[in-house]
Length: 549
Image (cartoon, rainbow, N blue to C red):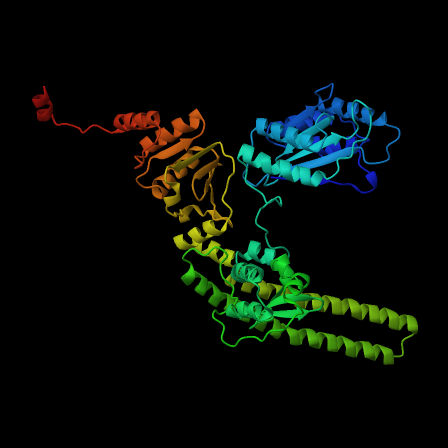
């Protein structure tokens, strides 16, 4: 969950316009809010529009259009403030999360209280027109008691802290709000790890030498000891500018020493060890040094070797494609330069030459654009044929039915903690098998979640430790039970959800004769009763019936 304040330049926000946007379709202040807003809200609540639940807080009227007029009157009573009088807050949920109206109301109250605007007038609406639910909150910054304009300072930190606690409270998917105790990489190393799920050079250096260097600095070490520790891992400590960098001896990769740990800065090391003394790169390192590897390796040596091989082929194909297209661009530039020179030697007037050069520039631009489009098409074909990130390779292999690739995705991805109306799991969920129903063409996420979207509108998400029903339907119930039987063989299924969903699960399990049992004694007894009822009795012949009599 992410809470973000939307700022407008030069304090140009208007509560009437913002309220119309939140409740309807972006009407202008000149348009009336009475009839169109109500019709749009009702349309949204019936499921055809983009607006879900609507809330009005701390206003005399509960009608949204009258509440907007009331807030505008309150804002007009403040004659002194020149700052923005409206606070626009947007709360975004993860795709697939469907918090209940009570949860949405509690989240709104907690966030507004966290920034000191809990008792201010506000209007909120849950928008459902995107892949993810998002809550718009328009808050009047004018205090209803003293009519002062309250500006929340350091509101971003307060919102992040409130989001972290609310995620735990309501079981929402955790988001990195910057409160992790472990310092994470930033910049390009963070992009590499997040996008490709491969360890960056910074993470490699921190993992290999941070602890040994810190231990050596506490034992009266010298510069020779520091360089020896570096050389064991194929690294070298160099001076660059006014600081130090830790570089890979076999490549051009380098990272600031102070980024690994502040104790390795030039100032700290020279204060402990004296003036800097350069080292010599060792030709016989104990280890091979840095090499790209999975961030979370889970028995993926064979898969990763295949990925590296095909990635090298893709990079080579991309290089050859660009080399093949370079001469055409060079020829195009040369041809238009020649034609431009001919214009200079022509007998045209100055105005005629200017017009001809402009025409040539337009023709050159179109020709180069066509060459660029051709290059994009070639590279798009290469992108489809090869995989340039470890995650995309694992997703493709998992979609093809590779269980090892699916387990690797689930090990490298963030565990899902999304709320759901119903889900299935087992007591020993950590020992679950990796199962893919390929005929249903699931969508495989970066964290290894398999999303099955069914013909009757149902949706089932197969997570690492449970099976979540996002949109309940009869087909969704059948798929969830089938996955549960295959992923948790020999274990009783724990079913969480409404009473109607539990009854549907029992009836489907009995009707389809699925080899499953339920951990709930009442559900299991009902399943066995329905199976006995649905089991057809053998048809007896007339002599057999006589003997029974």
